[in-house]
Image 1: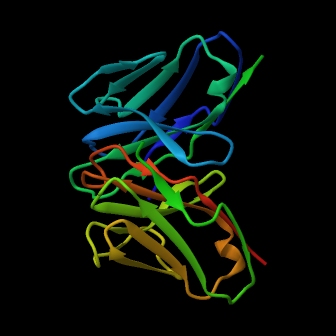
Image 2: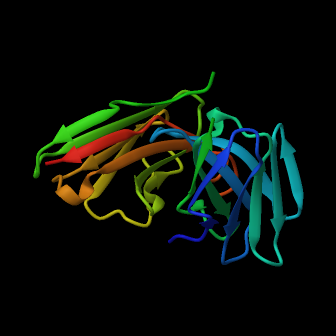
Length: 111
Length: 114
């Protein structure tokens, strides 16, 4: 059951620019997480934001959460070639044992 | 450094073969998961386990079974491989209940069934 939907599906920007990806979901959540996947490899956790939080930062990453709109955004500032990857959002709920995943945004950073 | 390892990065099998995918974690996590990942579909949960010898079906368990005899090891079994099981298989583990915290992933096994 897919809940998160990322937007856009693909994004191509110049190195140094900021990249913004969005995630929408359908039901109440306890937390929302962002993961990164490079070149068909395993996923790496980036950041977790709880439903009572509105914004969270980690290095060049900024995540916002708007529970009234059931949406989240991931901002990567001053992008680098190494940020080229697919980014996935996943939502967790108290009523559900598993994370529910979106289909991902493919980000390409052009040198 | 915490780690989840998977037995193979690439695997090629024939239709009808029995396939074993192994996953080992060294973080003493109670919860382990098997996902398959296909383009445009994100991650879909096949099975998960919250304790030794315990297993629960995920969203797409048909054609798969699992085994968890030891806390650190979670195996995915394709009883009779079919071409529609060609996919990337990802194993993950987490200390907290599956929906509540960060999941740690292995590098994945890309399985091709001919």
